[in-house]
Image (cartoon, rainbow, N blue to C red; front, side):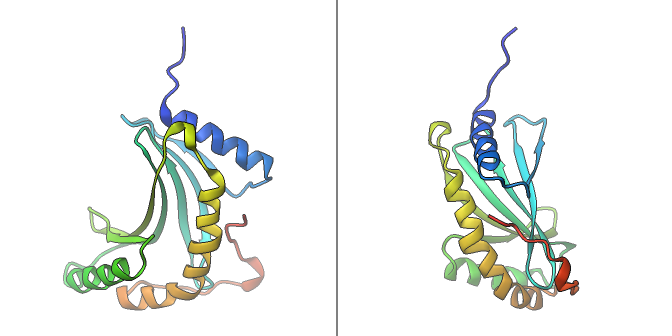
Length: 166
């Protein structure tokens, strides 16, 4: 019986090869059992004050998503309008990043959405976006986002930093 090879699987196989060839071992792979065959590559991003989950997400759509979970805390309904206004300003100022409050109000998310066909997967582009745009931005900009969105932060030992190393 022939296995159904989906677009998500094909895209993730290219990413797997790239990670292996470049000795990048900071991602863990997780396959979802959903209609679009979502495959997450999970890692963490060090903001100098907090570690944030970061994902590269493949599915059967024409998009690859890079997602940073800025906060997984429940958003206070009384503060949502102010947070939405602040995030809207970020969206206008920072073209590649799109910020929003999660639909269930459980967190604040930042996405980078990259159109891609399964025969045009570009892992160098994804890892460059992470290492050259996302990492430097959050190392300097997270504290302001946390303050404006009232996100709890904690400081960690600088000698045990975890950062996406690409």
